[in-house]
Length: 96
Image (cartoon, rainbow, N blue to C red; front, side):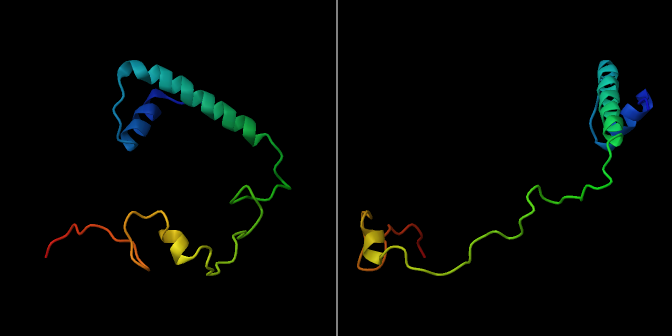
């Protein structure tokens, strides 16, 4: 299948892009190469190939979401510049 110049202009119009006259020849050659490659792929036997959504067949391999205390409050506040017993202290930035 060959791509005509009219098809190039139609695709450019649908994509809402402007192409110059000198670009048409290059685009036509590139699109013909793509179609030739696609025709080669059509020659492959895919009769016994399952369709894929993801490349990995695993489903939901994430860990269980469990609440746990990894560090203590004092360890979390250890490197803070300002803090009280339980919270970080930050300068007030909003006025009423």
